[in-house]
Image 1 (cartoon, rainbow, N blue to C red):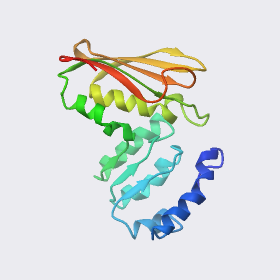
Image 2 (cartoon, rainbow, N blue to C red):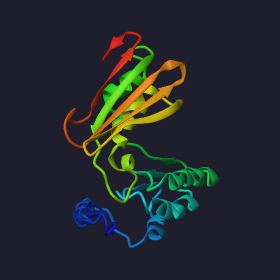
Image 3 (cartoon, rainbow, N blue to C red):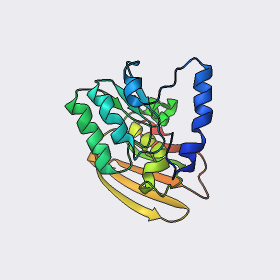
Image 4 (cartoon, rainbow, N blue to C red):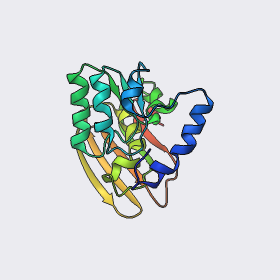
Length: 201
């Protein structure tokens, strides 16, 4: 049914219900009822705050779950989700779709050699109910980590104002990553640049 304090969380639900009904999907009144009928759960609530509560019975039932962004409404809840996944030995996955962008995957797969520096940008609207980058910053951050890989050792926010956030990260071996979350101004849309052993893209 969505969250009443997030307009986009409630306004889209009736339309989505009608769309999936038209595809022959059965609508059930609860997660418990859903779990009797499915092998895998896609938790698509766009409010991250109830995700932990919603996911607990899914983990207890041993059903693999994809949790759409934001994975949670706080770091504490995000960590708890992954701990439950491990406790119940039940796969859990969450990401931005930009993890699978062709350009990011090409760089991740080494087509430009080892990446030493990467800068990404994306829209970064804020939502009062969620910590700043949780709400929409994931898209550019996900692209950055797709290209750079794990092992970020330090993070520093260098700019934060009404128009944008800029965050710099350092990886082992002197590798650097930079994310710009844009609310007003440029750059527009989604994108980035990377410097690799074979040049800059």
